[in-house]
Image (tube, rainbow, N blue to C red; front, side, top):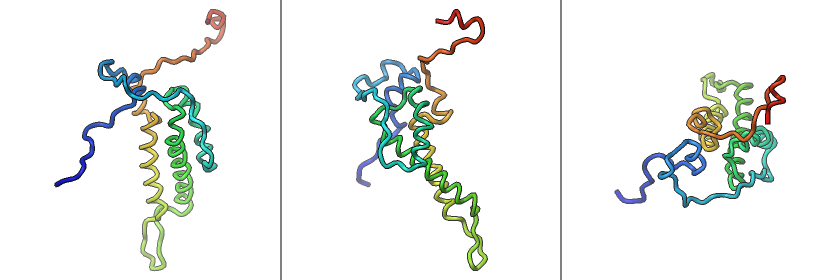
Length: 158
């Protein structure tokens, strides 16, 4: 059998993720490209549903430090997938997962299959950005924001 084989093993993690996970310094690729630190700009042409998701998720991404300007297109893909998932969920909620043909035979609603495919795609994008609890669990982040204590202790806070 000839042909090009894919790379085996786990998908390499981005440098930032490796640092956050506490990977030994000797195992981190110090020559990996480092993108500019600018936040991602919302691309023109996003659907309304994708824009809503972009605005919902961007503050968390910026707080985690896991999205840069170069990630804008990937983030747009995630947001559009969310928008499609919600549209399909609404259709399935109204029509149901099973439709009955003119012959009375039950068939799976095509919108249900598309919704499940969007759900799978959504999980893949979510892992890329650390949107799931299991994707975040191994990360270690030094938080730059501090919580000001309530009551009299607030006067002692820096």
